[in-house]
Image (cartoon, rainbow, N blue to C red; front, side):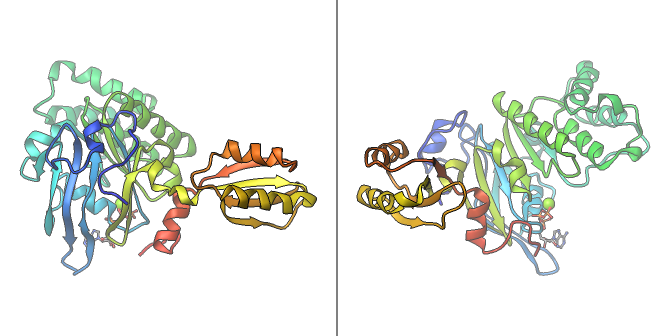
Length: 344
Ligand SMILES: Nc1ncnc2c1ncn2[C@@H]1O[C@H](COP(=O)(O)OP(=O)(O)OP(=O)(O)O)[C@@H](O)[C@H]1O
Ligand SMILES: [Mg+2]
């Protein structure tokens, strides 16, 4: 698929991001760009293999891939925590890691293994991070820390020492640290790790809220379904390579969208005839069940409403009718030939 997004304009995404190729360093268009970004570890393993990330300003970019596919390594390179073996990365239009000092204050990050002090409370840990941030206004520090704790649902546990935190609480504190001040870009590495379903919903809600307020969000996950719904854009990693990226809607190919009619067994022949006459492809009648006889077909450019109208006009009993869009997960499996959760 395309590196630069795509035909339809997504809400909040800068219009110029849709008219590729844009200048990779244009910060009004791109929040993150990389070219040929590569990391080969000393072990010889190529964890990230020449990827060209393109995260438009205003996007919620789901950075997806199975365990070990290179997501964290990529994110660590973006944030200047790991030196790339080769390739280039721009964050908010500035080269990384050279521009770390000027760019990173505008970037909130949640990455594996954040540096919290085990014997300090959650609140005291945030205060420490605040104090270490030379660009933050110390007069409003307390208010910001409290607001961040509130926002991630940690206010009640703020007085507990970090070492007594559950995994979910630790994760929430990491999120609070990323939210200490307004950011132009949030980079969240597996923010739902260790969270219960309610916590996962809260993170999704938070991401939506932040995106609505204009923050670009790059969020990684090995669990596609956890973040799929909030993403405007998606990039899928497998074995160090970026297999596809682009607008989520356009990644699921239109050709793959099928209609599914339920009719009476006696009407199957008439139904398949109508669908074929309309020009729908791959018309298949499936074994009838208790609910009726299913007939499916690839919808292509046809308007599903017109298909129903034509069926009814021909006297075909329409007991049920649906449009089945393949999920990203199905696409992923087709692309990689592996399940989503397979480790390397
Ligand atoms: N410091 C390191 N030294 C050597 N190999 C490493 C190092 N860090 C990561 N790797 C390897 O690089 C590959 C990619 O790891 P990475 O942590 O980037 O994957 P990931 O997509 O974040 O996985 P997960 O979903 O499990 O978090 C893995 O095979 C991993 O073993
Ligand atoms: Mg990871």
